[in-house]
Structures are given as C-alpha cells and as structure tokens.
Image (cartoon, rainbow, N blue to C red):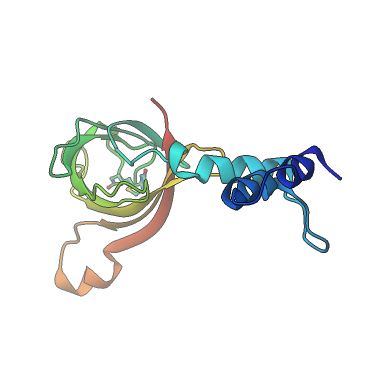
Length: 173
Ligand code: BTN
C-alpha cells in the first residue's frame, strides 16, 4: 500500500474531503496510469497555468512569416506589422500593416481576426481568423485560416481570385 493511501486511512472520521485529496494519486485496478508527459500536460492545463490570450508581441508561422502585434486595446482591437516570407508577386516583399480584434476571454482560448493590406508591394488583401490555444507544453499556439484575395483584371476572372489556407503561429518574442 502506498504512503498516500496510508496517510488517508490514518485520518479521523469527518475529514473525508482531505482524504479524497490525499487519495487522488491512488491507482485503481484496470485504470491506465498517466505517463509523466500526460501528468505534466494536465498540470499545465490546470487553471493556474492558463495564460489569458494576449496577441501582443512577435509570432512566427509554419511558412517562416513573422508578425508583430502592437498593444492590444482594452476593447480587444490591435494593429501590427506582417512580414510575409512568401509572395505570389514579383515585387520585393515589404512589411505590411495589419489591423484586427480579439476576444478577451480569460480561458486562454480566444478567437480573433485580422486583415493584412499588402499595399507596399501587392494589390492583394488577406484576412486571417484564428484561435489561441495553450499547447501541452504550456506554450501559446495560434491556429489560423486565411483568405487571400488577388486583384484580377475583369469579372470573368473572379472565380480564380481567392486562395485559402491555414497557418500555425508560435510566439517568437
Ligand atoms: C501577395 O502574395 O500578394 C501578398 C503576400 C501574401 C502572403 C500570404 S498571406 C497567407 C500566407 N501566409 C503567410 O504568412 N503568407 C502567405
């Protein structure tokens, strides 16, 4: 019998709540024991470790693009600068302004959206929508989907003007 069980049994009657807490680590027959990694993940996800999602700062996505979100206002609105690593244009890439807004829920799982205007080197516009999560390692991760609207010469080309995709961002500063 483990030390934890012994401590619980030694408690006098009437302190069952304390006994229940002390018994939390007890193994039950047939129950799969959580691995060290799973235990750590549970602790990170406990309320104490959840960071409320604030987008302020630098983020990098799976394409190597970086964005800096300036201060998020009390109403959740923000502006920033997007440094895309890729482009469908021939012109040299330049940092591009972004504006957006985020929810301010305290569970660290806010949704948000922002628009990037590539005006310094492209006629296109991109919109991103996404959600913050706290990964198993406690690190923030942003899962986003985007639409990229390209300018076409005439209405018949409208069908081919919008691309879509997904990007995952992690904090870069
Ligand atoms: C353009 O090619 O007209 C402007 C640059 C577009 C970059 C896109 S937006 C979606 C995707 N995610 C990125 O980080 N960059 C590309």
